[in-house]
Structure formats: C-alpha cells, structure tokens
Image 1 (tube, rainbow, N blue to C red):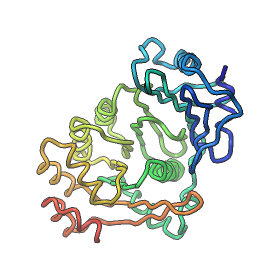
Image 2: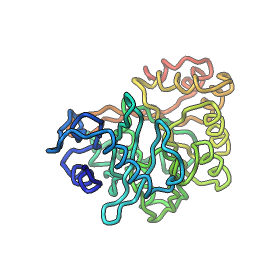
Image 3: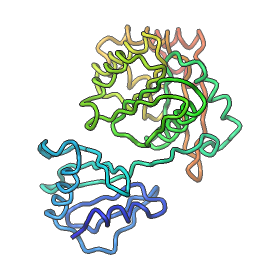
Length: 303
C-alpha cells in the first residue's frame, strides 16, 4: 500500500515536479523531461482512492464530496504543504501531488541575462496599471512572478494580495504585507478573491489565471480603480494572449478600451537552458494603445 510518506520521499528527488498515481501503473515521479517510476508494484484503484481520501481528510474540504475531479491543499507536519489534483480516468481516480515550494527563486538567478534585472524591476517601482505576462507554460510564469513579489516584499512597503488557483510558493512578509489567498482553501473562486481585493484595495494584486467573463469583468474593475494588477496568460505569443482575454469577455470593445488605457507593460517569457528564462519587455506606447483599441494585437508582437 502506497503511503503519504512514499509520496513525500519521491518529491524530494532532484528535479521532481509532481508524483502521479494512476490505477494499473507503478507510481511515477514527473520530471521536467520524462518520468521515473517508483520501485513499487502497480497500484490498484482502491489504493489511489484510499490515499486520496486520507489526504482530503486533512484538508479544509474534508466534508465535501470527492466528485469526479478537483484539487485541494493540505499541510503535512514536518513536511510542508502539498497540493493534490485528481480526476476520474476509466472509472478510477487519477491523482497528482505537488509540493508547495518554500523559497522562490531570486530574479537574477532565474534570468538567462542577469543584466535585465534592473529594467524589469523598474516597472514595479510605481504600483499602478495592468501588467500582462505571456508565457508558453505555467512554471516559468509562476517562478518569474514569485521572484518579483519576493523582491517587492523585501525592498518595498506595499500591501500585496495574491489570488491563486493553486498557490505555487509560500511568500513571506518582509517590508511589505503579503495577503496570499488560495481558491478552495481561503476563497471559493477567483471572482471572490477579486471582490475582496476591491474591498482591501492593495497596492499590488497578482491573479494566477482567469477562466470566465465574470472574473475578467471583476479584474477590469480592479484595474480601473488604479491598483497594479499582474496577470499571467499561458499562450504561444503575446498576440494570442490578448486574443484569449478578448474571448473571455461579453463586450470586447469595452474590454479593449479599458486594457488599452491601463496596460503599462507586457513581459514575454521564453524558457532557456537549465531552468532559466529569457524576458522580453514591451512597453505600451500610444501606437500600441491605438492598435489594442482596434483589436490589432500584432503591434505588440512586432513591437
């Protein structure tokens, strides 16, 4: 029978991203490239479900039914926080477990060109406007944003709120006050987190993702209030990122007008070797604003 201790031990393997449990297969550790299997027999459907229920009983969602899919976080004494994602595959539960990282990367260590650091950080000195981060996958975006927020917490005196689904790094109060909220643990939805942000009125708000028109409407309302809002969009290009936002709204013209007025800077991330990233900065000119209002996002990609 596979245990929580087995999962924790596997997550300590160098390069481990998550542990994947699927009925009929050996437990696997997902690496950045490929997978390594435990020295363990193939697991049975009941084993996966038993472990899933064991973890869920330790979470705030203990009284909610499993259903066919979901995710939750759970604290393990002496280990830290685990994130659990699950769904049904051919009648049995499939489960993935990740460990919430304690130490965000330093921005200089993350960048393929450390000399880009100061120009990137200069964007955040004045906490106003909309900051869009386009990335081909989630991990570089989350690493980049965690590094930015850690720097701001250390060297600025801001109120910073994060609205995350799920939390990736545990951030610490230093010079700034960080209010870190997670969907499913602290709030029921991204929408609820955005409404709380409008009440608290933090200097900087980081929103991990948007999934519907109501969330986008609340985000645009927050931007109009003058807060700095940081939003990553996972897409192949900056143009595609803007189009994906437009597809969420019921009123594309209004959304383009608000975004064009408040958008300050776009960061385009590219994964490089050895867990480093290239960062391209696109400052929004009047020409870019005009193009956004017209729905021509090619100016961003080409500029």
